[in-house]
Image (cartoon, rainbow, N blue to C red; front, side, top):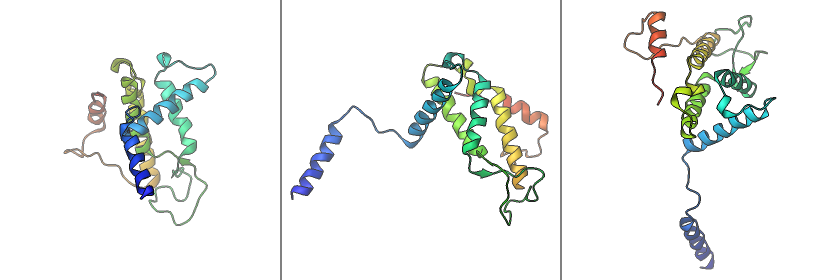
Length: 172
């Protein structure tokens, strides 16, 4: 009985403690990503204040993260280039997957604005970031032999109209 009594007391104490709300998985990831990016800026020489951060810093951060990636991206000279399931290992580099980078940028874009940044100056919402992500997506799809198809009604859109539609995206 005393064991169950202590469990109940422990639960009651947790419920009465209003100091730390439980964050969702998304909110926890967003906070962790924001802190990681802030640490990255602080570790630059010289350190870069967030107010002076621009899309070039964001692109450098994405390239820095590649060293921790787990997605095999075959180089054009690799005999497995373009094969979705290669039969043997190779020496091609591991990179961050496009989907992971895309989700990361979405969380950082939201965190920037939640931490007082203006949507007009959001370095995570610039055209150069969208272009970089699109190039990564296309490069990884070719390297794995998996064609990426846009999920819109007219899948036979010309490249020009695809670019114009992506540059008018709203980030709010």
